[in-house]
Image 1 (tube, rainbow, N blue to C red):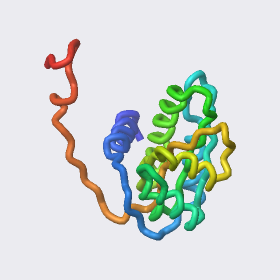
Image 2: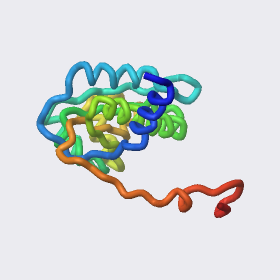
Image 3: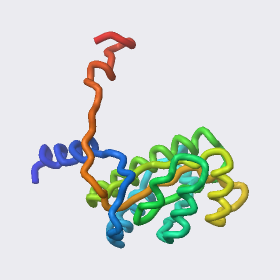
Image 4: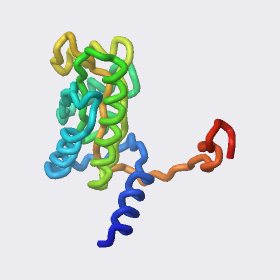
Length: 174
């Protein structure tokens, strides 16, 4: 494979990533999960501190319980598994930024295996309740979860034209 074709494949993967919130009942292979977790391990973070801890959730009852909490993670209920990120609770801004980076990389690793995924957030009381369900330490922060599974349907995607999203040198300049 040439470098140009490898680049084209990588760009296609990045460009095609979409959130998937409906899944089939087919399980995620151990190889796919191992690859996703390897990407998680090698993901960058603020100061290269990797202050997160990931909890892989496969238990159906637990996924349903997490999906019911206050926030935006109902899609966990139908996923084959979820990966819940537990932050150190030491630097809120940096950790939120790192969680976003890490979540997107988890989604890309899942997509490389043909899996669908979506980022979810726990808000308000949902954060404390998620911590309790997962037995996370009190000082930690539980805010982000990624659902992963085989997509139940193909997803397309409309996107704004590039000229509506990008300026040159100054905002609004073409």
